[in-house]
Length: 254
Image (cartoon, rainbow, N blue to C red; front, side, top):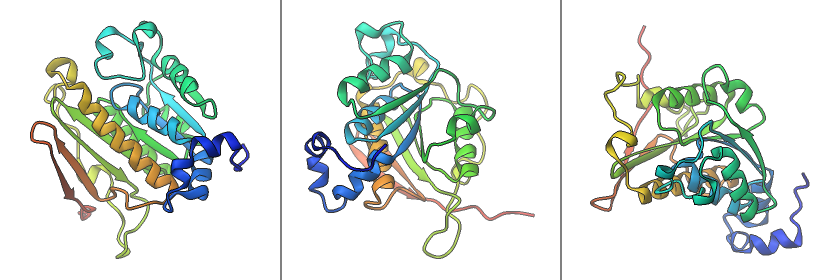
């Protein structure tokens, strides 16, 4: 793919190009970018929509589920006409309608420790919008091993969170950035944390967190701003409150 922007792309992305923090160089970086998104559900929907609209040149989508009626309250990349369709197919169709300049690769399977190296190969950024701890730990381990930045988020009922992980790099003090296990040392016991199918979730909440995840991805790709590395952003929808918690790499014990 040529880095040069076509006249159509220049017109499409002109509001980006006007921003000094992005400009033509940043838009070309977005065009070159290859981003793998785990999940085409509540979080993955706004991530995919906004990255496609932003001009990310290649999006990979990992999801083996099909669209169901109960998904449509929050998974806005799908619609009534795609019920029963694989989510990767439905999402790819929506992206094609939104931006024909974006290439989509579908992976109709689970992201696991075993499949991770193959799925992540060739991608420069990983975004985890999954809804289970097994996938989150697999994504974190794979991204750290491959030296690929990871944007990860989670939602539940009226609360959400997100952070950016680059544990293979050092901070301004020369210390390694924290990894996922520095924030969450081990997954909770099975059944302790219920999923949204059991407790419910506000659909718009997934839009808030998913959009913030897309923003972090755009910052990482273009070099604009300061990504949420070593910071966990928390959102309480009921009180309309954002909080940020800083976290560090844990000291290794003998």
